[in-house]
Image 1 (cartoon, rainbow, N blue to C red):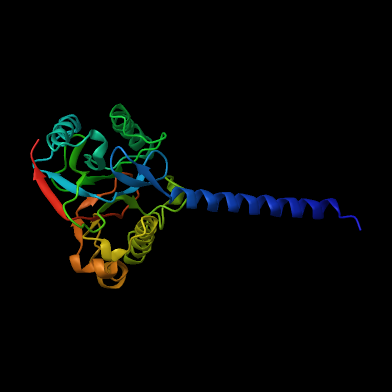
Image 2: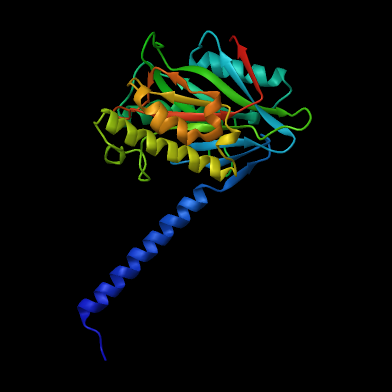
Amino acid sequence: MSLSRRRWTQIAGGAALAAAAACSKAQEEDDRVLIDHPKGNYRFVKGSGPYSSGAVAMEGYEIVHAVFNPIPNLATAFAFVEKHLAAAGRPIHALCGMELRIPTALSIDDFNAFNQPYIDKLKEWDLHVDGLNPVARTNVATAVDPVTEGSVYGFCYTVPSEGSAADTFVIAGAGELNEGGLAEDQIVARGDVSTAGLTKKADRVLAIMAERLAAMSLGWDAVTQSNVYSVHDIHPLMAGTILPKLGAGARHGIRWHYAAPPVLEIEYEMDLRGLRREETVKA
């Protein structure tokens, strides 16, 4: 029995949709594969666009978190990072995390323009692995006493570990975006900063954090620092939404930075770390 043209079209269309879904799923799974960065002694999870979703130290190494006080501008911070890692006997490739601060949230176009010199600097340092950026990053705009230019709050790098060490890692900052990436129509509960809207946003970000932990074969019990970045009232979300999702990690509490995510209309961001060592440095 022959099939009608309409039926053939339905079959072909269904096959195309199935193939597209399979490709999308395969791409998502590929994005969550840990990639070795042997020069830096860590592994990283590929992020969306030119970014990394997070980094975890290789066996025999651990990640150290350095926080600037006061906060220097980008050029000063970059020069300090080079000297600091050299003084620690580490190559620049050991850099695995950066925390940036900007004066105010930006449009998507302005955000991408701001990022280009930063990405160029990482390439100058020869940090990319097979064209992929391995450095986890958070970039937010502090709402009170903001910086006047692009600046660096802190950075992470690997060092040889002393004795048996738990997994140490850094998860890059993420806001409430769906799988489609950085676009206005991908913002969860866009424009809704009510408690209900913020709950949806927090749920999405917590799911992203859990996915990134899972990509490293880690759980919330490995988390020692959970950071939230928002200028909205997150207190109503604490007991019912945020802390229950953190599991054992909730015992370390939440660090709430009164800061806006870097892109306009994104209202809630988080990042995570699992550490043994943290230091305060001055550029």
